[in-house]
Length: 75
Image: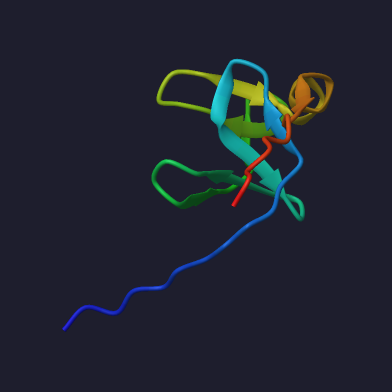
């Protein structure tokens, strides 16, 4: 038998160009797969691997955060 966990997250920011990556309580989460990403040290800077070939530093990520637009749901 499989154990599953459903998690509902309210978030405000995502990274420009990577709409499936969000910040929630100082964690970077891929909302498509549900994976938490860990910060890494690469080339003298601390940052995150956004995909297999793209590493960005924390300062770059902070400068490219975009607020998520709230959608109206009538029900």
